[in-house]
Length: 266
Image (cartoon, rainbow, N blue to C red):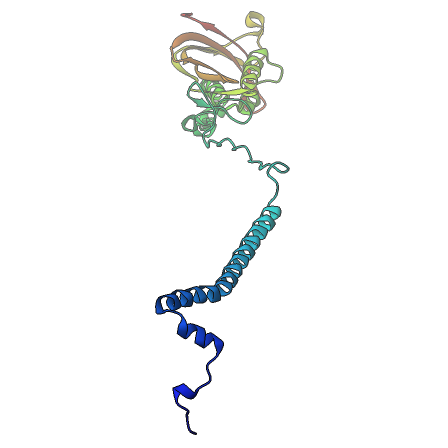
């Protein structure tokens, strides 16, 4: 194809105007034209970005509102925090150095428990119908009295006593009263002297037949006695005279009466 010379090309009115316009003006017009051409495109991009930003903001706001609506209202349902429970101590309550038991009575020290006291055994010779047998039976009765005070077990003492005997019964009643709301330990009485061992008559002493009168001097301590939550302690020794009527009944010696007189009262 033959390209016509530039002088023979048809010239449009715009080209002619551009050709006639001075270069400086053409440059300005060209820059203005480019700006005019870019303006709609830039506005479109700006509008698109604005819409996108608005959409993201709307989505974020909506998500926040939804999340807020899902939360319980603090005004309607305030958070209730449980009150702290008081710490429970594993240690029992104490009083005067003693633990208080569930029944409200002070707990007896384990080293002085009732099972630490052995039940006295009646000597074989005390089973004989002799004055020596009566003497040993009287000594055994005193040992059973100590055992009853320290353990609360009054049955052996009652078994060796005649039913209804006021002397033995007074000890049994007193011991039972202590152990109904307490305990005792350290009670002790030992014989310091054998004063008299001899038969006694009904006419002279009002004793039953076949009765031997035994008179001892003894030394005693009361030890520790608990009544409820009160402790009575007396380690002071004191001396007494103990008289017992020991009566042979059937095949054994039985305590049928007695008296005690404290020598040095304090």
